[in-house]
Image 1 (cartoon, rainbow, N blue to C red):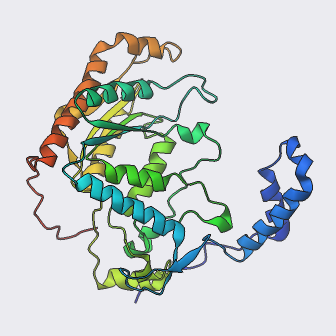
Image 2: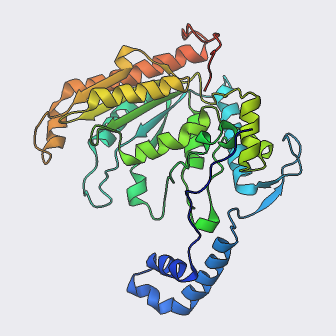
Image 3: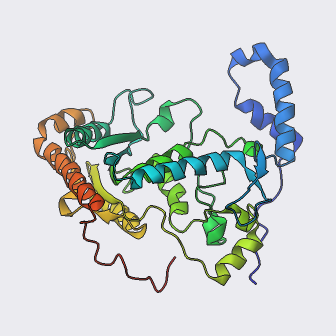
Length: 356
């Protein structure tokens, strides 16, 4: 049995360090009006931190879990319940087709940039096409991370690299009340992915790669590709049990496989093809099916033109607007074929000799 390697984490914070860090979140002078109350809250926060109070409330897992007596997080259980309901709706042929449109730009006009993103405009163009064809367009605007109060997609902690069964589906790393890693958006985002028949990701290129909000979501979706739907099998985060499960043979279930996808990647100087390929490779790996050549678009909008006039450039670029419409049309067509079991997936019944 392989042992977990230790020694990277040094220590918990001291009482003084914790006090400074806690009050650093409330540095505005107006909080001085309630200084006594803040000190009381800080005392409670310290107690939760030092005693590792990760979960808010737990109850025995009950029937349907490998260890019915394990104290399972109520918050995780509620997220799991919503995912099961979303999956049932997604598989119900009586429900309308649904496509999740993901606006991957970090920019919006509710904060520092002062202007909406071109990606958002392209997302609305795609949504109009889908809705005209009777498809529900569920828009996920990831720029809310920069404009909503205390709203987060917390980073992936890499549990999968310790052992795949330690990575739970949905992710059980958050919320972590001991570390105040709360208000995590991913529970809602998992539900949106599960409910969708098709996915369209629209994104600009930031330094040859995906914007940070989009990359955070991508990393947190690792649990959808091989993740463990029963945390009681690992007694939560027991690394030894997780390693033993993987060593005994793990099936690496692909929880989002079979959905169809499209991509719109745009930039103004460089990086569009590489980023589009990376996103395609990721979605292919998770078992999603591309909706055809015209559903995978990478384009420059205003190549080496002024940033200040980039929206005007998009106004004039009627061709790229129509290409985005074609991405939406292709995904809509693929969703129709998918739900009628007519979408050709030649390797669907083949077994991976090396699943991971």
